[in-house]
Length: 484
Image (cartoon, rainbow, N blue to C red):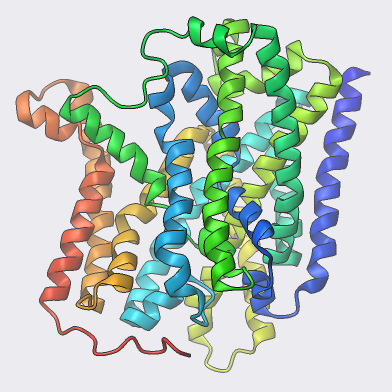
């Protein structure tokens, strides 16, 4: 009886979310409505949408498990790096890009650097989302299996279909309105669980007293390699997700430039504060039920709620968890579909109408969902999948974006070389360095160099490629199309 009530709630919640998405789809008349909600959203709705960009399985299940096992230094990447990204979006991106008549980051690369840079950036951006979407689908499928015993494969199918349904019809309008509702559910559900658990452990003072030595240490030990890894954790999402299309679409959907900037700052504060709640929950669980850390630590919080909480708390928590995952997955599914339609397919047809482009984008959503669903059947490590996604854009797109905005000498050749070099060096080092470190065959400075995170090699190669490629070619005289 107990499980059937919880399952009924989950089913109603999922169908309710789809219903809200279908209702929001009535506002979609053009591609601008589908991609950036017609640029008509108020500040708080944009902030909620930005907050929901990454507040998904990675935060509630992945980061909480890392925190329970490794303390504060284990979660620099998320939530701290993710909050940094939203802040940087407001500082670096929102103002210079808002008034351009563009739908994607790749449109900016075309205007600033030309068609070759646009295509190259699109080919690097689209694959970066598959791992991110897959992580959310995996989390939803695992949750459904844990609660109901539903086979994992069926969970993947159901979750992929649900998110696809309302993203396909409503685009950014559906994503934003469902994000707004889901943000409310996230805050209420997680706050209720935090209050209950903190009372059970005897208050925050007891929590601090029970912490192992160094558990709440924020800065690394004063050793070069530790500082390097700490820095890499900050920039993986903190800088790597700045040139991501899901962030861009949310920023551009605001009703004014000032609104978009304020929304970035507000969402950064929201993310950093609300993301602390899963960490507190995981820490309380570590104190009360340490045996739950054995096995798959990602499932620690869901199992704790199922085994040691009443029905009311279970409904609140799983409502929050489903909200977090769905809000992240829908926006992530829409982003690459937009790039495929706008930057890869549209240029092939000179006379394509707006209605035709809208159809292409919707079918692209279907394609992205299918690829992600297949990946979810093959892989199931949430934290690993999310890390891969941010690394893609950090090593290939961040440098040409910032150079294009703030360095007049930057050229098309520099942008393309930066993308290709960064990706190539990152892939090469990621494929070889971990094995060398594990083998223990290296000593001294060679061992230190091999232990440096591959994303730093990729980012360095991207910067050097940008500088060298630009200095060896003639800079553009104007940024063509800036006022179009």
